[in-house]
Image (cartoon, rainbow, N blue to C red; front, side, top):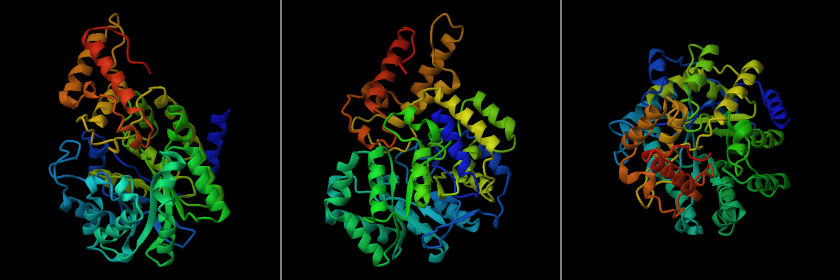
Length: 469
């Protein structure tokens, strides 16, 4: 009954188009969008825009997330130490602006701390009125949580971005540590009040927060808004067709998007959307699910479904996409130039697809890399990515009587060694738990790593049974 009501809620929100896109999996070299999009050129004058009700900003439907930037020689996942490719970033930013994109989202924490500087260099070549800058108060470490440290972070953002004001400033990733963390990062040090003062001075035009995790934190911050204690000009939430109904069932600590969006919508607070594709997972669905989606839209990419879904609700201001490759940018531009909102029939279809994906029981890792670096050298996102891929490809061995057992066993073990160097595999996890508090998806990372390592050892010894779900 609850799922049916949530489905109806989404239908209620249908209408208009808006900015949509998503942080994409940088390592998707075989992503079908990289071939299909290369054959098309998006129009330059068809971008869908949404108007910010607070100040009249005309914001592009597609927002450029400066989180997974290209490195020299390919993607950062292939070479985590390679320098970022400033020339390629410049080229893609130029192309995005030429085709109507005007919202660029960054953070002091992104791209090994280099994202703001790289973004600033790329955008400084354009007129200031051509773009909106969104960045964050990413004061996660103790030395940046002092009043002085947080103020310095904000001043560094202005300097690195080469601007005099920030269009959209967010408290970064609130909710993960409950209200004690909110108080520690923003209240006890007086930084939230200081940010309000900067807004009054014109150095910040819109003040909001990005949310991950604890529902009580989300509700408390909206209560502040209702009571006039603080005014939120916008809020950034995770929204996609899987998380619409299933976020809480995938992880009991997460909140369904239908609730997050609904609470913002009834208050008239614009929503900025992150993770429309769950870090690329909704662009790389299993073959059987992809075939269903291709039946309804043979010409469109699988990713297009996620972008259209995220952009359809009328209260969405912008949807972010971390576009490592030019082909991703082109495909997203085509999707939003202009947006074709999801119909009721298509929404019913996507709710069925979401249930199919939920039933796969994959680990909900978006490869955001917030858990990295691991002090013991593990490549946590790569381990989870390989495991999830094997689930989607049917390469999780079950029992020896299964005729596919030995093929699947070999595919899993050989693929594991190829995807993750032995010194970076799950067997080296000591359970220090330094990673888990940083995970926006609230994954119990050491627990999942130990399950995978146990499964690998049993697989090597040909003890059947897959890992516990």
